[in-house]
Image (cartoon, rainbow, N blue to C red):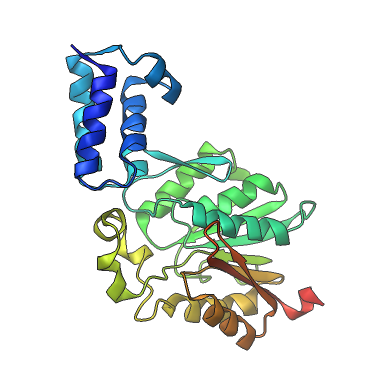
Length: 286
């Protein structure tokens, strides 16, 4: 039998040859997943023999990652801002950049607000809205998406996190599925913002695998903002917060100002990029 440390080394080298960005880490995580180990145990048990059956179980996962399929899809889950989410092909993998949007929402939504009605437009796995609802017990969430996989996955994550009494998962476009008679305080969204012609040049995990519907923002990346922000500014009683791509913050901020939002500001992600733009309803700011 081959030792665990040898399997780890061979997997890492193969990933490196395939251009996987974090070959060592990904090899460790796949071994942990297949062998039922914690990462520390991989090193404490480096002489542990790996059986033929375990190797047979590992190989399909290694091949998928070597083909640059997102690791989170292979593992079936992803940690995101203090919650653990089910993820699978058909939804974007939640990214650290998007935690900036959650932090901005938590900054603006008071911890004692109850009830406070929040819409997560284009919910995907449910990451943004569910992370906010997890931190703010007073939040009542509308999670909106128009594709079947995100809707199913958001519902599964709602159940997984025990939030079913506070979350409605709705099918449709932008704010349309939320009945006009229902109150709505905040609109949050991470819409598609990559310019169409740039998608094919992105890393394979994105360009080859992730759903184009969730990526393609049109010619300049701003199509969805032009559709969403005016509606959100009219409907939300408190304010609007959106994630944006690199270099887009000023244009989205101008759009918010033009539709009457006030106190418009930006938040930077960990890389120092202006990643989130937010504005308040004039009545709320006043």
